[in-house]
Image (cartoon, rainbow, N blue to C red; front, side, top):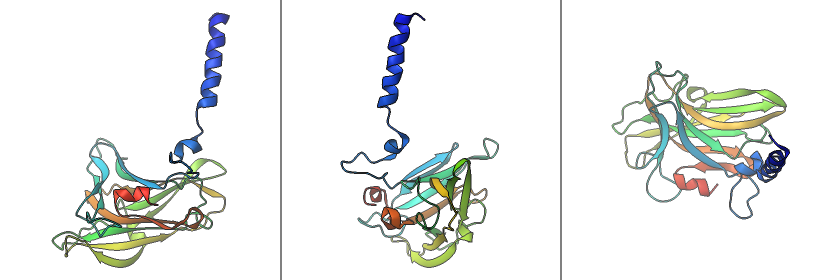
Length: 227
């Protein structure tokens, strides 16, 4: 490469690096005056036929409106294709927070126990049932994981689905233990039960007083703009 070509390319690289925002800025809201990352949930999935999405008319009463959304989690990927497929609900805006005291202290959701006909669903399991997954780091990689499986969480109140009087959801709460020096890298709900192909969850809540979440709760898609 000649010097005439090398100089403009070098300048271009410098300008690009100066203009490219940091990861912290990329995670932030784009709304005027926002200084903290947006606290949102993103339904997603990994692997063919494994996904999460909001589904109307199937859940508990919402924070507004009458759609009674629940979050549908589906895991239908054959193990012969990939054993790591799962439904994923990413909970964003809590990266960089301490694990436990001074940061995220409690995680909660409601898991469906009976379907529209009153039949037990078997969705709350100790294996691949709905679970919170905290990916965290202490000073430097490798990252570590703290998971709260459905049956291992504390069972609480039972509530009835708004449109199906025989369908019930059970509250499940996980008190996050303090881990000295641990900082959250990512927070998510995962579902990959090998026997029960789907699950419904609702009223996803995260308590983090430091970020004003006392708690922050998601009952419908529109709650992404209100927490």
